[in-house]
Image 1 (cartoon, rainbow, N blue to C red):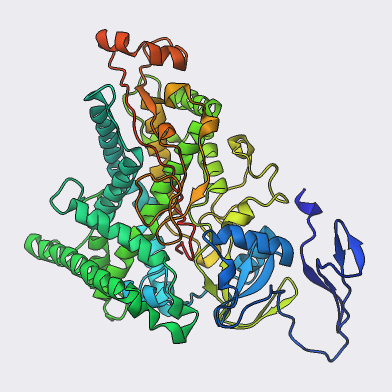
Image 2: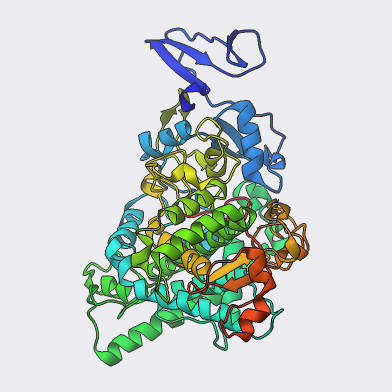
Length: 590
């Protein structure tokens, strides 16, 4: 199937002679349903060949074409202009990659050439002049901070050392769901909010050594993280039309970024100082990484700073920037994968049932799921992969920038060119996937395709040098949480509603549009729209000692089961499946 695809490409047939194949409505040789135009370039003709481009307007270029959902618009343009096309965002030329073949050339064949990042106004202000790993341009500093992340902070050993944090926080969330729903037969639990809080708590404990939910400043901290996600993804006109940068003073963006940066820096500075004071007080100047969970990321970074005799690598701002990356890149990606997956399970109850059967069989007789159990949950892994495919948390990977000239698919790409990879379009490409719009986890059973950056038709976390170093950490959280929820509870739509009634359409937010369902959501995130009535779910606590009745029988017999103190819990909760990608202009990290 993939072999049937005819990408726009140029084939060098001999020195000085190039045959170009373009899908254009011009007279030419037929290729499938399109036409091919033969273009001969004789020897001595060294005129550069840029990728095809749609018509642009003065000043704005192609910005007016992006709309509320750029990943969808860019796919439509790519279907007309090809998998590698050049757009103009204001005065800035930008390559857009929309096929696995083109992505492979950018992220593997020419990975080094496209390994840098363009500096953005907001990124520079928020992330300490790009001293982190996500926004840092290619160079010695980026190599050093990425090594810190890969070798020390997010290595397999370190990820496993925080296993008890993930299991403890997941168990606490399950108890919260039980307690919230048991207070009344019609009580409401916002599962999305549960997922957000859980993710923030896990990341806080791992990165900072403590969590903030349930504290006096917990709500403020949660709002701070929400603002971080909003400002990182928001479109800044000054990045693309520099002479209009003054507009940010009028629309309030500059003031909001400045205020946020000041508040966040004060918070992070306080956290680092607390760790420094504690190390001095306890005389604990050395960190034993093998000592599980006795130290967090701040401790590790302070130790790396101490051991760096030159003093040129890990400055205080670098520590704060790397911690900020954990929240900016980690929290949204993790919890929105949970919510999208749960939404798909509700829409496909037969898949939900199959997953529950696997999870409950593997964990039979156990009170709680542990990470040891996840190894044998193959269908769970397939379900999450399929969710990542059809709803990638980062639909438009954060832009790369070329550091040298390169020839990609026959086109000449100059140094300094921005590149956006449309991971959403690639994951729904019919030339790579059979029935790509269907949610079908079975496609990943007995398949070697993975999200680790080797299979370019499936790159939710990027690939190559700029691939996300936190993939293992994120997946461990997602798998454990989703397995625990379906292990403990049966979920169904109320009033006999069918999963087919769920509206999974993406809705834009205040940054990139307005929600269409009127539901209450965090302003910086997009959600599939859902009818108010269908947003409530009936949830029953699983009790494996009972014979499994049908879902209808369970719902009908709740009162009897409660009277018999079986403790099956009926609860209605608001459920909003949210698109972590924010669907808006740039929404991603490494």
